Image 1 (cartoon, one colour):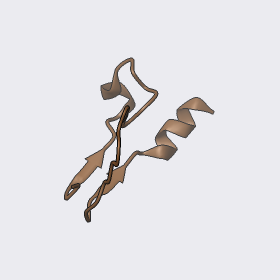
Image 2 (tube, helix red, strand yellow):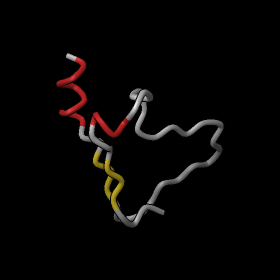
Image 3 (tube, one colour):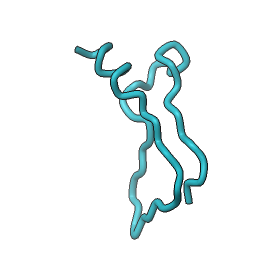
Length: 50
């Protein structure tokens, strides 16, 4: 359950693994529920890539 906020780090804090904010593998019947928020800072990343 996500109750808080997950925030992507700045480009400087991220390090060398810049492909994924969250990686989930081999999951079965995964449910993410709650009133939380994921702030991936998409514009910051898109501006760096484009």
